[in-house]
Length: 272
Image (cartoon, rainbow, N blue to C red; front, side, top):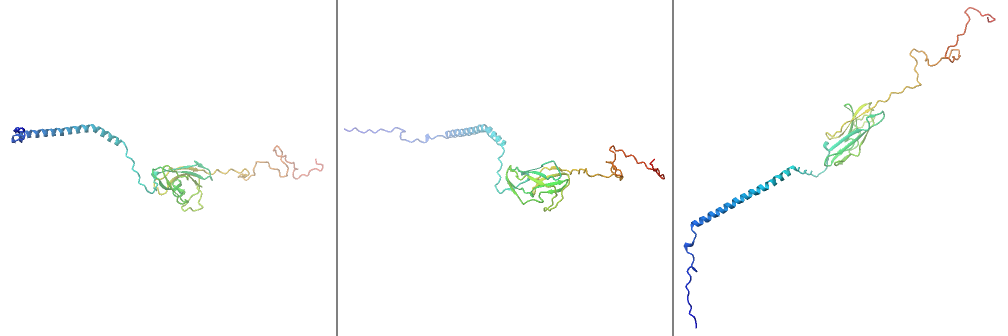
């Protein structure tokens, strides 16, 4: 037996939609907007305050780093690579010394040359006698120069600290002339000054070296040479033998004079 179905009435509001009375009012919407703006403003203010705190905390670190960077010198700029250049006066150290302060006649003068490279980059210099010139002066007069009879070019590629191995220059005390003219005269005694320079390099000059060439000693007298007196008399350094050939007495006294008969008389025959 079937049970009759009973229709139940739906609950009010279960299937019905909300009507116009359930929408938010304008006042509610305005309140929501004010709250949202307040939250946004608070967020912005918070971010600004947080940024200020971070800047204040980081600023001492940045200042200290800048101070440390200022104390450090900038690294040197590397020089461009390329072929070596000619040496300048600032890149060379020149020195010249004499082997003695005085030289006897006939003794050659020996001068020691020092040529050292002191820059940070290799450079070229002419180390020949014509390029590395040694000049000797008597006062302001140039009497000898190694360039007058210099050899051909001798290029040296020198790095920092390198020195020219050829150090000795010899002067034979004769003058020199351009073109190495022969048969130059020998200089006289006196004080001379030598200077080292590099041809074509302005300012590349050493300190002067001073030395003296001594005069020859005076000739010693010959004992065998005797000089007659100016009055024409014979020298009195020895006794003179008598004209009759008799020897003088040993004591240096003159012999007695012989007695002669008076003039005009004849001696007696018996010798009385």
